[in-house]
Amino acid sequence: MKKKSVINRFLIAFSSITLIILMIIGGIISAWFSISYSKQKKELLNKHLELMESYIGEIFEENSDFAYNKLKNSMEVLSISLNMDTIILDRQAYVYAVSNDEFSYLKYNKFELEDIDLKELTPEEIAESQFISKNNEKKKSYIKALINKQDLIGYIYIVEDNKPITYIKNLYFIIWALLAIAFILISLVSFYIAKKTIRTPIKKINNAAQKISKGEVQKRIYIDSQDEIGELAESFNTMAESIERADIVRRDFISNVSHELRSPITSIKGFITGILDGVIPKDKENYYLNIVNEEIQRLSRLVSDLLDISSLESGKFNLNIVSLDINEIITLCILNLERKIKEKNMNVEVLFSNRHEYCIADRDRIIQVVTNLLENAIKYGDNDGKIKIETYPKGNLVYISVFNTGPTIEKENLNKIWERFYKNDKSRTNKISTGLGLPIVRLILCQHNQDISVENIEDKGVKFTFTLSRQIDQ
Image 1: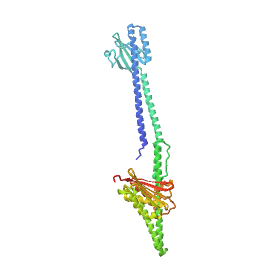
Image 2: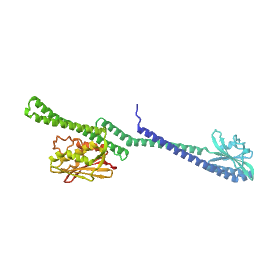
Image 3: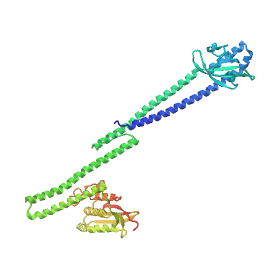
Image 4: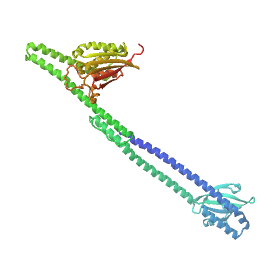
């Protein structure tokens, strides 16, 4: 099935509207010309009748050759100037004088009018008729009774020249021809502009989208346009960059997962094979089995974290929202990590603005958030350093911050710490961490419609701050 082009539909609609507008304009111009011509013709007709009536009565009364010639000359002058031929009839409707030799065959003959009864013609009435010449040419005509001193002395019959009518018709034709040419030119220009500014860019965007769908995520489009099409192209390129970044993250994720899984599996395989082959002495077997156990626990943590990330990102994880005391949870997490804190001889400072700070959240997941942040502070904090935890309410939220003294995070890496498997210290080979703690923290808080931020405290350390919904009616 052939696809329907949006541009073609747009052009058809635009051309139709343009055609309608031009037809309306043409109709208005034609009507204006018609009204103006009719008005002018009526004025000329009345002027002609007034001029003829002004002296035709006394000429009839003289009834001399001089008077006749004077009448004929006046009729000829008026006919030329007003484009109207005049025929003078006496009271019995016999032709008395004509303004043009073209009508000389009518002289002294009774003038027959099939469509007008002269007896019923009133003094003020101007009756319309139709004159048919010897060559069967039809011309519009008018007849009016001539009254002198309240007596009927004859009739004046005026024949309209067809040349002005032909001129008007030609003018109409020229107007409509010009409008037709204007319509064609407007349509062609519109098609060219639409093709250049809409159709071609949209085709570029469509082709680029098809290539990206086939895996060419590096494809970009460049459209020099400061309009909606240009904005669409910029948005498309932004989307393509996001897809490319997501593709890079996906590949890195697969690579990191493979690496994180391969390392412990390789160790486990090597130690088990060594024990089975007798390479490892009997007295060392327990030592290496403990290492194998640690690697298995590391694998278990990694798989558990990956499952957590998967469930959180897919939205399949259901939160168990309850009322909880965040100060109590922080205290509990500190106690659980007491051994690790003592190993680095770190000092923990807790600042609670209130003895109890009640929030609305999933208790187990918030324990996971606080634990991960504390473990991160312990891991990257200085030996003999300090961890400072603070909670305070503000509006409908409770703010929780975790600060540790130690090296700061490079400015360009502040946003990268939320990436899976990212390690700020590339030299670290810590086997306890999976590199998924902070991404899980952020995903959990996103599930709560909350956020977390990180900042460097200059020459002191790093501070993480997150929010939770505050329980108002405690």
